[in-house]
Image (cartoon, rainbow, N blue to C red; front, side, top):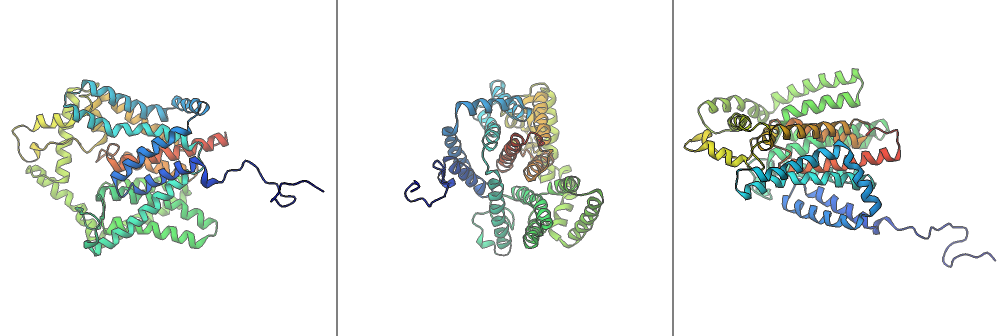
Length: 426
């Protein structure tokens, strides 16, 4: 009589130490980050709270061998650059000529870049990185549906916003989220079509079209008129042959022309630039005029202390000094010059600008390989670089978290692939 464990069928090989996926601790840690991503387009308060909970939940996962492996990450510019930016901001607190609450407020948005190494460290081990991106897509898809609803029924807005068709936050954040989803879906639709999963492919293409239509007819940041063509050219270069890429760009020009003529909203947004520029000459506040005024003053502040800057959180104090006794645009005070390079240059000088561009460049190079994670990481970095010509998006809440989570998760997945296959690009 053959021996077997009671309750097991004969001949079955039952692993004795197999732990079900849904009761492992790291499963719930990843689920917390999924929750962070779900709330990212909707609530800053919930997002910040869940990030703190996630960071605390990471602590029990640390072990001595893992920590040694994590420390090896610091030999890479992908980690060194964001950490150096945080260190520079911390040091800049000491020499800033500004109230302490302004110094701390200036340091706060930079501190989040310390999370990038933690995400690299975690997702080079966790197999659930794609869950994070899927959660973001689902959340933005719900936001897309809500955007169309409140466009026609404004009374259904959950919170008061300044723009029609924007249910929460603002149109700049919404455009950033929708364009990221749009370009993340394009290679997915292509892949599904090549696999002959036609319904799923057309569904992905239809959802991507919904994001594009919303930006064209409902609400869009004018910076999107610049970063959408850049992302489209990147897509053609990375995913299409030279012939197909050329055809796509021609089709995009035709589609853009059709949208331009058919969307009164988009035409109004574009032609308002000329009106706002004229108002700038009359010292009348407007979006374009504010940027021109802020940039001009920011260049002057940079010239005053070009090497190491005026210190962390000094921007508001500098603008307040310059605005004394003035009215209109010249009398406005801000802590955000609406340009990422100038924002960094004022506070930390040329040294800070070099660190900023090293970070962007190292993260672009990180995602030069193939695969969906590399593509999403590349889109996040490229979109942030272009949109930061007109905004300080690395230090803004939504766009800053998109960069940190997008680069951190995609980078960790890239490192995981490299570790599993030494021939992989990362």
